Length: 217
Image (cartoon, rainbow, N blue to C red; front, side, top):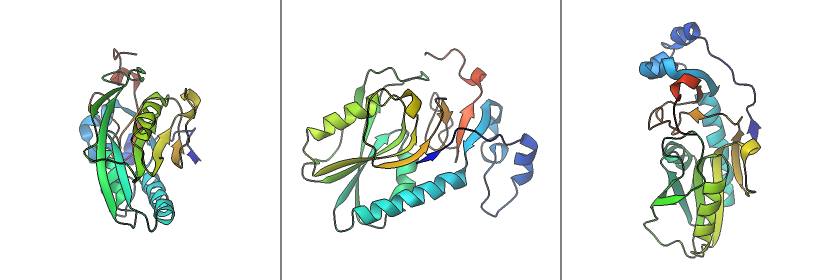
């Protein structure tokens, strides 16, 4: 697991200078979504770091599930970007399904009250299931989801998570495929949102406090 405990700030001047580059370097705030620039404090994990991690996770999953029929279950909405990139890094035949589980609303911290907004479209009994999760905070939502899925008797049930805030995790979870450990700050980008904004940023970023001032707990 890779740990990010010292976020790196990208000066606006540097960001603007890099906008015109086409060598695969980090897309900049102003170059990607100019309207978000005033709300972003700093970039925590770059696009390149994310893609490197996703590729490594995909390679491990490919080896572990070779010869088996794997069903990816994406947890909406945040995991949709990760699921798209990860699935293209897994060199196996795949099946896909989605669940929408909510415990945030417009808040910046999980409420602990879990609601299933969308259930699976297919039965998972006897199938190898890999839950694709964008971020684990308290772990309460994922813990509830895993308990629910185990009652459906899959052949196996594992989790891949891009981000974990282990310092605020309230339940012990066995995460087979781990990405980055991050500080207990509210992050956006790469599928993660605040009030349905910022999902299309290609990196993980920290918001300025004033961007979510007044939001529920």
